[in-house]
Image (cartoon, rainbow, N blue to C red):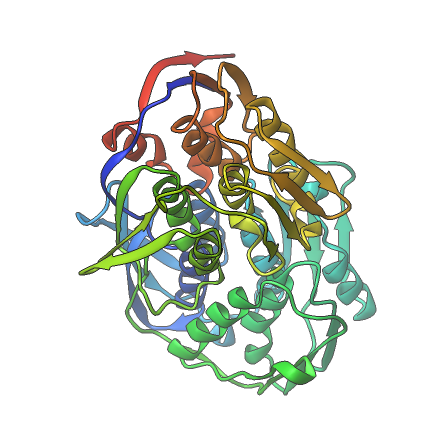
Length: 444
């Protein structure tokens, strides 16, 4: 593990945002299921994306990397698909897929693995084994398939058998990742299928990303949102194509909030017409009085002259990944701000709801968890002079880094290396903008 000490220092400069992790997962999978070769450009090899690449290789895709000079640590991928519809049905296969700590890798690849013969053993790290999987467990057992799960935080999941076409009844308020996993899989079954939602669909933006990628690779799905129904024709096949992954709004959120708090950061690499749900960060900041300005292909958030103004209620159900940094902005906005519908934050890499309140409170913020909401009363400044903990959660670590820029004293962030899960170049980018990291302390 590593701890870092950050002195309060304003950020200034231009940052090129890394490619969208959400899109990269989906495009790597679609290309890996296609007939022929695809070229996927603008990929950053974060821990989560490496897990998905490795998983699809295990299922038979050939994935080669070529350096991409446009982004530090970035690559293009040449992917020759495994094409499960044409796979030879060998018997006696037992494969192992290491999902690391990636919920997306696990939940996307569980149903996809059923397209291939043999057994699949999923392993992982951190708290991945404790994240909800009941939706898949019920589907597998209802269809008479083998589903054997270990106990506790450590992931140990063994699966066998092929999913069958038909009607799938799924809750929409647990995680959209289950729906995405099924949407990747069901078009390749011989007959038509449906997914019927039993609740309102949360994180719908991620579903639209999935549908967009599917369409790009030749897969048709009919989504009737008002009815909570997906109609999925069977007998389809993925068609290889080229794709460039756009910039990640969930990562841009950290630098947009930094700008709204008085830092001078210009952000490049975003698609202003993106369907990413985390684009909501701009709406949230505008609700606080910040100005979002465009300069050519770049965007920037500017702090209002009198500071941010709270006194608003925000709905976090569609964009849980940007809630910690939105909470940071709320802590420095006058008045009481309520961010509600946050129950799913409890089942992220950490209990992100409790962790956000706990760590910002250490810095002098007035923030508390009330049921499934954050209630925040704005303060004039944050204190610093504290040790805070990332909870080994990448989004917590990056939020706390931004918080350091508006603290009166230095802070020490424990377990800072967790940013590698989604944004391995974060600390380098932070320093290039003037972030003052004056101590790295390596633990055991």
